[in-house]
Amino acid sequence: MYRFAIDKPLHFIVKVEYMDNNYTPEKLSLLNSVNEKLNICDDLSVVKNKNIIFVYCPPKVGSTSLVSSLRLYGSHIFSVLHIHNELMLKVFCGIDNVTINEIIKYNKYLNKNVYVIDIYRSPIEQKISAFFEKIGSYHFNNTDNNVNNYNINKIFKRFNNIFPYLSNYDHYREVYNISYPETFDYDNKYICQTIEDIKYIKLRLKDSATEWSSILKNILGIEINIITDYATENKPIKEMFKMFKDNYKIPENLLEMIRGCDKLKYYYSEDERNEYLQLWERKICIDTTYYTEQEYKLYSSICNENQFINDVDNTHYIDIGCVCIGCSKKRLMSILKINNGDNNVIKIDHNEAVIEYKSDVLKHKQERLNSFIDNINKINNNKKKSNTAIIRELNSLSTFK
Image: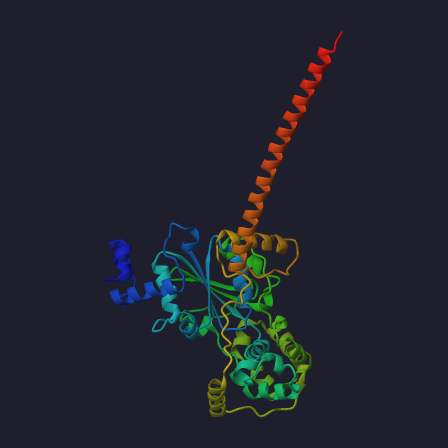
C-alpha cells in the first residue's frame, strides 16, 4: 500500500490522475518517496511547504549565489532546491528512474506554488568556470593546490582542446520541455511564463548585481539582496584561475564558434552581443586544433577512470535553508550585515549554529541567575543596614537624657 493513497483525500487523487493518466499508484508511491529523499515536506499547513523553488540549471552560471540569497531572505516562506541534472539526484540521494521535470510537476499536483529558475551566463566565462570547477580532480587527476604550480601554457592547451564540449546546455529551451518566447525580453531582462500553473523563469547572470533583486521581488513578492557564494576566486585554485583570466587569449576559430552561438544570439540583444564579442576580439590569437568528438569521448573516459578525488560537494552553500532557531538567528544576523553593505557573509553551518545558540541560551540563563543572586544580596544588605540603623537608634534612645 502506498502512503500517498492513505494521506491524501480521494478527490485529490482523482484530480491528479485526471491531470496525468501516467500517474499510476506505483508512480505516485515512487514520487512520494522521492520527495522524502529530497526533504520536500508535503504538510501544506506550513507556509514554506506550500511554496517551492527549483533552481534547475547548468552548473557554473551563478546558481549557488542565487540559491543562498533566496534561502537567506526567504527560508520562512519558500523551500529552495538546487539541481543540475538527474545524475546529481542519483549521486546525492540515490534517486533513479525519475526525471526532474516529473518531480517539478508532481509537486504542482500536490497543490503547491512551484517556481522553476534557470540562468544564462555568457558562454566563454561559463566554459572557463566549468573547466576550473573540476580542473584538479578531473582534468589533471591532481589536487588544485598542485595545479596552481603548473605551467600556464599547459592549462591553456588543455582548455582549448576541450573548449567546444564545455557547458553547452540551455535548460530553459532544451530541458524543461516547454514552449518559450520567440525573443528574449531585453527590456525587462528576464522571462517569466506560467505553464500548467508552474512559473518558469529565466535570468541572466550579467544582470545579477543590478536587476535580480527587483525581478525576484516582482515575481516572489519578497525583498532579496543578492550575495556572492561559491566563487572560484575563493577556492584553492584561485591563483591559477586569476592567472588564466588575466592572460588567456582565445583562438580565432574558437571565437568564431561563439559568434555563431544560438544561445548568445537569443539571450543577448544585438548591441549586447556586439559589446561582448568586441571584448574578446581584443584578446584573440591564432587558430588552434581541438579534440574531435571521438577524441573527447576518449578523453572523458580516461578522466573518469583516473579520477580518485571526490569532487562532489553538497555543503558549499552559505545557507542550506535550515529553519531551526540557531540557523534562523544566524540568518537574521547575516541579513543585517548585507543590508548594511557588508557582503562578507559567514557560512551558516547548522551544527555550529546549534552550538552557538545553546551557548547563548546558557549564557543568558547564567546572566539571569547572576542578576537574581545580585538582587537577593542587595535585599539582604539592605536588611542588614536597616537592622544596624534600628540598633543605633535604640542605643541612642537608651542614652538620651
